[in-house]
View 1 (cartoon, one colour):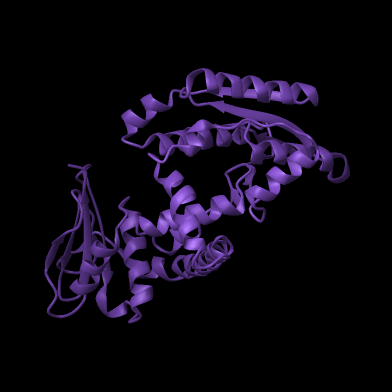
View 2 (view 1 turned 180 degrees about the vertical axis):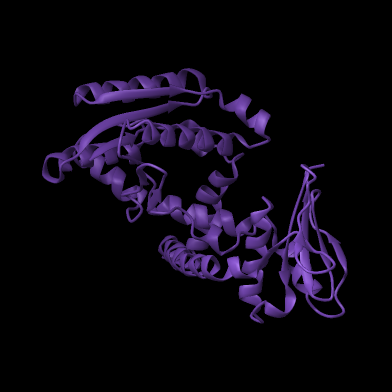
Length: 322
């Protein structure tokens, strides 16, 4: 297997590369090194890239570098710097896989990263799929993204690197508490650890449970939803009509056929909205559920583009682009 190892220069990614180098002859890996220069942090980022390039050269590994303009992407896409950087990285990783440069990309996410991600998602009001956090494996159209270190603590990794006298780079921005994730890492999780010293493991366990639960529900939705969705709206004399307006799309669900379970109803309604390219939050989903009752509202504006209409028999979702 050809594995491209994503190396930032930090302790976790350096340790991942070193462990895979040790294991490569035994399990048959052909390794390369990939590094993203995000166009931020100036000379410090330049030094990180030079460090990773030298590390790859020391082990006679192919080195791929991608330079991106993260601030520009963040502004253009209305994202935070962290979101833009992540999206740019993963777009390149998928590009490497699609082009056949590698069979897999390995990233060095740890159990600490998992705990921080779950807590971050919880604070932002995530659904169950969000609480699944970082997946150990992401299957792509071609190849996969792997996270072999999700069961390891960052402190353990640093201890191992010191034991083999291996250096790494420190990213000064990781200490900047202007970033929400850093406040979670340096302030919130240490405080929660005073209530439960095992909080990192508990959050990682929650992620595993949430992923398994969501996988079950996704399989159920794939089985149930197609039989419930109705295109467009009914017309006199039978049959259904779909809008020919290029700026509008709609679908409907027959109310009597919807399961009574609130859990399943939420998922079905959210999945139906996703068919139209809309992501509903909790309050918007609850408005739809309320519309299913006989005395529910007949119309609801859910987002700037999506609204719902209720007839005696159907709940209809309509999305307009403008």
